[in-house]
Image 1 (cartoon, rainbow, N blue to C red):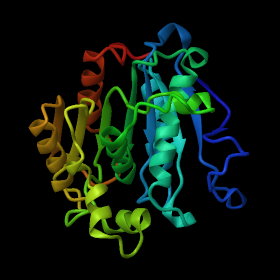
Image 2 (spheres, rainbow, N blue to C red; image 1 turned 90 degrees about the horizontal axis):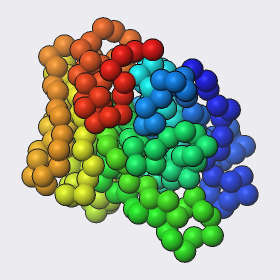
Image 3 (spheres, rainbow, N blue to C red; image 1 turned 135 degrees about the horizontal axis):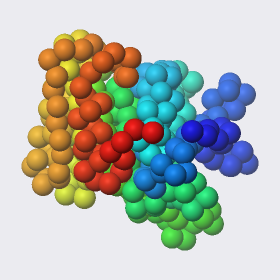
Length: 271
């Protein structure tokens, strides 16, 4: 497996506010599978951390795991509430990451029509936001990257925050929307309300024992997917706490890989 240099999401001359002096430049890093093992599919990965930090075990560790099955992992460092940013900065970074993947598909050896997104906890909220609030690009933009679609081809949500309403994770909502968000903003960023028939297919998992993010979050999202005729696979496992990632043996990895294999994203034999 090869790993790229860290590259900024936005040109350093852009007007995007990312507090460069605070070391908060949004960026991505590409984890390449061995060339003879690559499926051509990619996964853009958004680690969790309550929109306050970024959990390494939900970023690079996931990318390395996926690379073992032939997928290119693209780990995103997006802007955070702890650095003074609020919505829509995070979603703009997520869209930019998808556009960069498509714009660089040939150079990175990936299929621009097989780019998924994966997120955990608050990163799962950002992933769900992208799955439901993407755009198809800006054809008149001077920046060629901005002409690319930000629509993912599928999504993987790991113990995700979905709603900004009554069932939300309070820290994530505060860091994303501020202390006193309007009712309209809370509703707009509650992704169970944003699903449409154009939402990409999803693999969603959570645990009954999760005491940090309520299991009602993925249940609400799955119900919305069903109501809109969007294909999905939902797993609510009895055991496991929040934020476990790959750190403990758990059958979610086998279930997720089987789902990705069925869609031609992952190899059936580990490298």
